[in-house]
Length: 301
Image 1 (cartoon, rainbow, N blue to C red):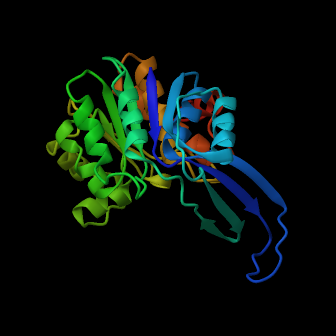
Image 2 (cartoon, rainbow, N blue to C red):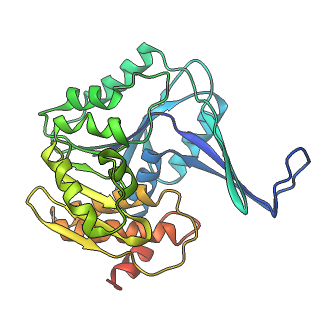
């Protein structure tokens, strides 16, 4: 089974209007409510590609009920932990020329509720895959990623980590199966600016020296780079298309890589190209990538 963890999921309330006028009544011409959170995005795209996953995380209140219903409607299994205080946050995304975001707080999570998550993770078995991604809310320990990795170390569980800076660096000692920073996050780690695929390669290899097994670097329109634990180095420009919505493109790449890896019996090239085409397919669509959209882009590479 594939599991995803989203520590602070959200309902994303997306609105579009011609112009935002502060201090006045603004009327929107488009609105949509979507489940949000990096792990949830991965689960939804995996479902679109025909792979079952189970979304873990914390929900609360009536907004938590709505989030769970929306995630389930996408065909994902859920085992969310319901907290007793607060509510699942609502993130408002205002698209009016420039994009403005107003992010909610999220529920309070007690030590007992956190222990419920650890109890769930203790049920994972060898051969399972766990994808942990995104920020950790202030109500949780800052070393959440490390605690999870240490707990599951040496149990044959393949762990994918998509996080920034110290959240990522501090888990490399546990040898995650895959990490996926983008080129800006990778550059921030080493205090350099990385703009080309060739520039990225040696720094991806430095993360391997620190403990990562496989490193996938997303670079938006520039494409992607993959350095495998066998020493393979793959790179590709992004497929051609019109950018519609970049939100969730990186999560889609993770889902595509995992799907390609599983479908090809662990072939790095298949996983890499499926990942880059899945990320691009989501970026070229108002919604997340579908299998047909991914296959159409694969045919162009």
